Length: 167
Image 1 (cartoon, rainbow, N blue to C red):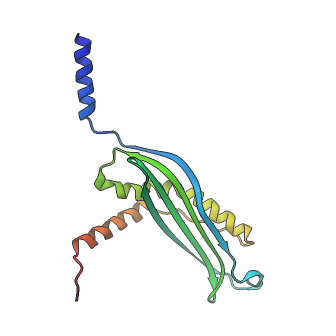
Image 2: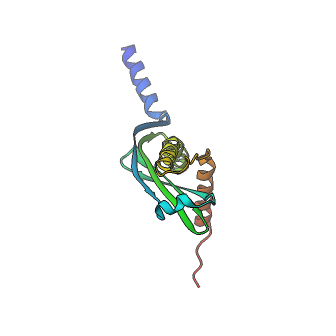
Image 3: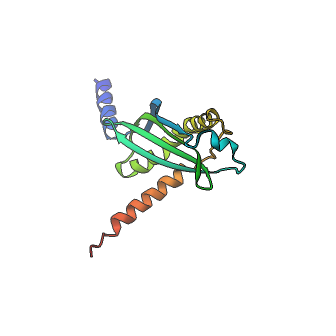
């Protein structure tokens, strides 16, 4: 009988204890990828090296109680004198299980953790695409997604605090 009481006490304690944070990768995949060389062979005859610009965008969709799809979009544009040498767009995605994260911290957590997981795969895809297009590999430098997520949270908080004025 004492064992039964201990089991009841333990299960009551388990119910009251907060859930341990959990983050797991279910699936990683390439959602979309495009490569364009709009000027064709003409760009290979140019003497001027192009300037390369990189943009990042993240998106998250809740699929279930603890399942999320995360997408890291990387857009790389190389151009010189208003002529686009190449354009690469990669959407690296994954399905993630997330539990035990407080609701108020979830957005920031997703904005940091998911892109950090997806970035190495997107980096490889961009490098491979640029070499397949006949250009030197584009080597993306490390990105501080933690700072980007914090900045996005701060911007969202400022938009909530500052009411829109209508004139």
